Each structure stands twice: as C-alpha cells, then as structure tokens.
Length: 200
Image (cartoon, one colour):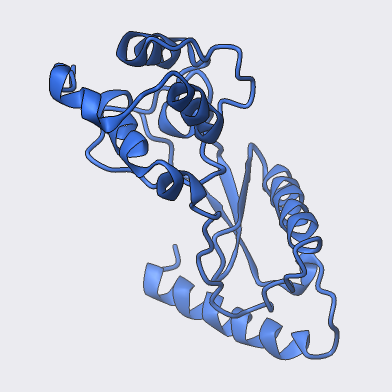
C-alpha cells in the first residue's frame, strides 16, 4: 500500500504536469485535470436516510471537487457531472475555469441573507438549528443542516419558535424563510420577552 506522503507527492507531480499541459489550450475538460480515484473506508456508525456512503471517490487534485460511486467508473462519472455543473455555473458569471493543477481557492456564495437581517439569522441559528454559529448564504437551505429524509421536524421547530408555517416553501431556502418570518413583524426586541433557546 502506498503511504500517504508518497501518494501526496505523486499527486503533486501529476498536478504540476497537468498544469504545464494546460497552457496548450484555453478550454479545459475533466481529462485535462489531475484526477485521483481511491477506495473509501466505510464508517460503521454512519446513519442517514438521505445520504449514502460510496465505495469509491474520485477527486481533482488541489480542488475540492469530488464524485462517488460503487465502482471507479461510477465515481468518475459522478465527478464528470459535478465538474460540468461547475462549468455551467461559472460561464454565465463570466468566471474562467480553474487552471488544471493549481490550488483552487475556496469560493462562497454571496452572503446577503445575514447582512439583510443579521439578528434574525443569528436567532434562527440558535433557536431552530440549535447551533452556536453557522455560515449562511443566500444559497443556504434547510437541507444543509440535517440528514433526515424530509424537513418535517425543522418545519415544526420553526412553527413552534416563530409561529410561522414554511412547509410550502419548496426550495427550503433560508432567504425565503427569513422573509416570511420577518413579514410577521418579527424583531429582535421581542426576544427579551421570550424563553431562551431549547438545545434539546
């Protein structure tokens, strides 16, 4: 079995080579990138009705883009789908693709929700999500904060905390949920008369 330091060294050699080759063209496909496929160790304690563990994981070296599957071919196909989704999203925004082999920067969606109603977002994180803090952007949804098959439990928590039914918001985006809560006249000044968040 190849040691972790040796594997990392080989990956970086492959990344360097792919980077050199990338200067021969301007529009890169998945096969222009250094790719690693590895067998994934299953976590016996993992339990989720919505997510599954994959035996194989394919990833682009130096870039947090992955794909999973039961075979190496399945993992590579999943990676291709995710890679294409990134290309399709970046093109309309006028953003070039990350050059093969380089260390891709971490990119976040615009964080407009927290700045528009920061007090509400902080209150929601503590009293509904039961977290001390969380990164919330205008792309965040309820699905990002649990592994259940439905949002029913969190819908019930929102109804109990804010008295607002959001079960019909199909996107489950927090921006839409916050807008509905705010429309009821919610304000931080009401918190002083409410009980502290229940962390159970």
